[in-house]
Amino acid sequence: MPTQAKAQSIDELTEKLGRATIAILVQTQGLSVKDMNDLRKKMRDASVEFKIAKNTLLRIASERNNMTELDTSIFNGQTAVAFGYDDEVAAAKAIVDYTGNSKVVVLKSGILAGRTLSAEQVEGIGKIKGGKNQIKSEVVGTIQGPLSNVFNVISAPMRELCYVLQNHAEQLGGASAE
View (cartoon, rainbow, N blue to C red):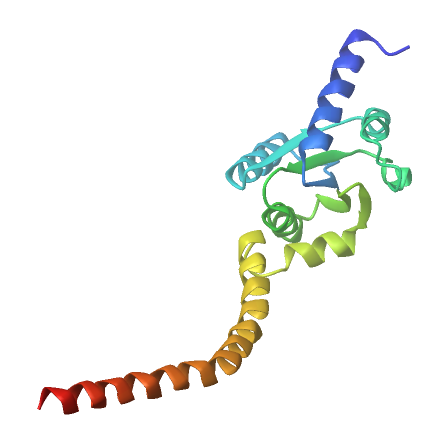
């Protein structure tokens, strides 16, 4: 039977996991207080919520969020969680940048759409140029370019016919005015 404080922590983690688009697990064991404060500041600047959590409470929170495809073996060792609510790429980029410069902080894994991400997959997401909106715009551009070309090819004969009819009408109008 969990204590009242643990029950509140579970409820809080359940809410955060349910709301987060990505959750990245890192190990911060051995990090000094000054470095931990620096890490928290960098996460706040990147709009990422950073919290140290007990593995058992994280596992229970993931179960409450029906994350059935989640590999619960990721909940081991000392764990801190970075919750990204808006942009998965920006959150991963902030964590990957920090772990790349830190000799103590280790990237463990991540949770995206209720599925487990390996540390390599989180690093891959963090190395994507731009952010979520840039990726969306590139996809739209990739789709829009060929569609625009198809539209132009299909509408060209009708457009040319309209130009011919307009020129002919102008010639007839010009001949009657004389």
